[in-house]
Image 1 (spheres, rainbow, N blue to C red):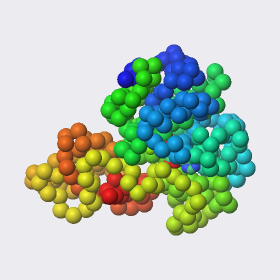
Image 2: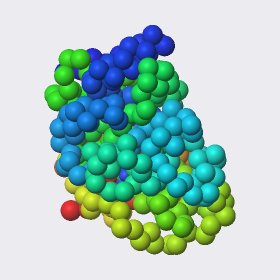
Image 3: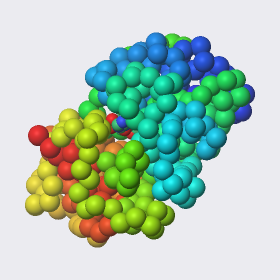
Length: 319
Ligand code: TXA
Ligand code: MG
């Protein structure tokens, strides 16, 4: 059981930063999804975070940092194109995988020679990171605040549903409302000569090409393990079916121009691609909370953020 805190003033954030330093876990909003945070330098706290998530121990975690000055502490040999990406898209929904320094231990990288870094674009997250930095913290690891394989939470209430049975009374959930983007950050491998997208997100391949001046390979070949690339991930309990005719009693997620057939349960009817990303996970959750057996999803077409949405839908539908 953890406390949900809805009035996150500066003094609350200062206290939460101190709790992080003492080894407690703090769930907090980012612009993508909620993360379950632990002090990146505290191996014991990170180990407990893995337990709370029920996540296999060899899966790497993203280190969230307060500013560009903190990159050098964790990473080395940062390529020019990665610096362009940082300048253009941080703070923002983008995680860069960079060659690690020794301080980024195996417990953070899953034994790989690269470390994942991100500066989130959410005032509460940035406030917590800067308070944490002010008391000597170097970074906060924060995987999505869900049990392993489940749908990422986009509200503080959803974090509570996922994790409150596993958190301790000293842990906290900071409530910052609904996440504005709604799907996880774009992960870009920057350990080679060219950037490679390992997980699509709101920072699209077109944006990366424009920022770096490098044309990306169409298929991201990589030697790196990314847990979000497991076949079934981000999945609700209900069965997810893509396209086809929505039957009576099934949940339906589709753009607003798709009508709801008689007897179907409309879970979301977004008016734009951005809104689709923002409501997708809450809609999948709603289906489970209502005990639906099947969710019919009509994915959005197009490039940019639509690519990330289709990626998550196809993972949710994988058997
Ligand atoms: O939007 C996001 O990225 C959210 C918010 C909370 O920041 N976080 C998130 O974390 O989605 P997580 O752990 O659920 O997914 C991060 C992915 C995992 O698939 C992990 O394997 C990969 O990033 N990753 C992190 N560090 C890595 C590393 N050093 N090497 C390879 N993959 C890494
Ligand atoms: Mg996750």
